[in-house]
Image (cartoon, rainbow, N blue to C red):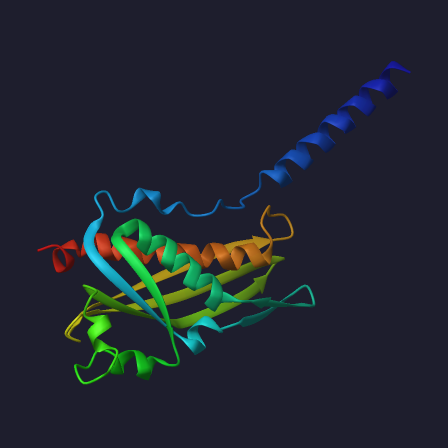
Length: 203
């Protein structure tokens, strides 16, 4: 009887250990942008968001289920939050297309007077979004590019960011969360690029 009780206790302890391991598996916490902007870059940023960027949805498949990732909407939120930490101020304007955004930088454009109130204009784009499934692991990769322009339309710099994540059956985060984390890492990498090129923004 004593042996049975001990075995039962051992089984319970093992089950608790396994459950704890799954709960603490390599899921990752959301990226904290507060490490940046110390001090803030002294400039007003206008983030121009083309319609096709904001509406971008990536569709992946995991364990036979189709997953829709509204990466465009999430990217707008992440960029607004991240640039709000890094720069003195940031404002977001939706535009119909990248071509319209570029046209607004020209002195003859009727909106250019308003654009010139900002120090920098930024236009983002996805250059790569990919996912993979291997050994019950779901991987996500995102490359995000931000093009910085001065108020006179001259190109200041182009800063890209890469983010990747891995989730799956034994991970704490879901495939949906994994995509968001990869996006946050890409945005964080862009902030690293801004920090590394402060000389272009601080005069």
